[in-house]
Image (cartoon, rainbow, N blue to C red; front, top):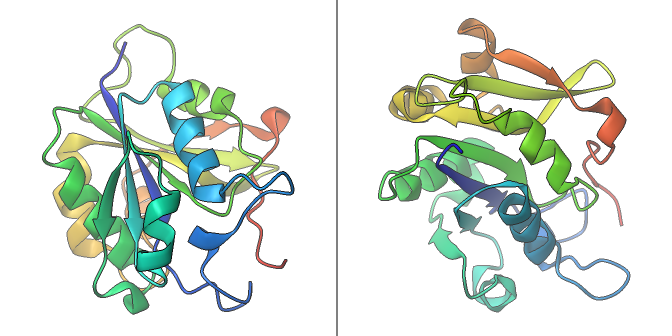
Length: 188
């Protein structure tokens, strides 16, 4: 099995949502950040990192105790700031790949993470670039092999994150439409 670290991008202010999505909860009261962490863990990630920015003091206690928190001081710079912080924290792990997801995908199933990590045949490793596709639209999770982390971090800008890098470097698209949960929640 591949050695994967999960990264939950949860540092934004959630302007359209009406507040930081790191503070959002499901109807049953479960914090979205906890759901995202559990999805990555249950999907095959050995470790999980959560990036926090807006509302970090309040959101911190919602992060499960077994996950690592990376505070993003420049969170207002967009998703790229969160991605850079997550990859920097991941560099301190022994992971070969990082599985990136967003906190505002509370319906994303662990099966999507498992599909993105692929079968246990050695096909996923430090050179991997994969992006989930939902109904023909690129989305999350994204799998970045360790050999790409530094380049992704140096080229990510604004709210685009790694999308330009993934496109330019021919990331493998993995259809996850049948699994559901690919739509982010932007409104309460």
